[in-house]
Image (tube, one colour):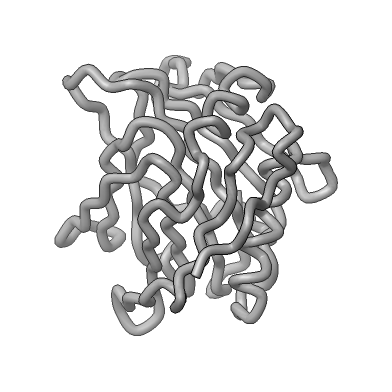
Length: 209
């Protein structure tokens, strides 16, 4: 069963876009006793028009970061919306749908939204967990909605281990919960293939960046 459009067709941000409502929620896969993931392919309908709208309208920033003894360019464009900031309307409506779906999680409601634009295969993000500012030992919730060209998304136990591989794009949803951000790491590696841009929206619970 599918829900009707989330977005007003009069808006420029992707007429016809909306969340696909399957008859049952995504299957929760436990990575270990405390960490879990859920994956839903093509969760967001009309993702192509939303991708184009956000690429053109978000205030993207190119950041630089110190690495050892030098300052380097961050290999992607970024944007961040704190919980008291106004979201682009389509993103706000996606957030409402996700908050409704995950309202009973111990991590609490989704508060902030980050965005990354991977312009080509040279853009990437290294192994990490989204734990900056989070309470030690607390459950967290991170929901990633991917738009545009699929890219590899890797997940592994912190400190190394068997790598899980996903191809995320075109409205796919990946949710990481429980202790996943503390005990597992994820990355988007570079690729030598010629690829079109990918845009990632990250909806996070309080205290996670």
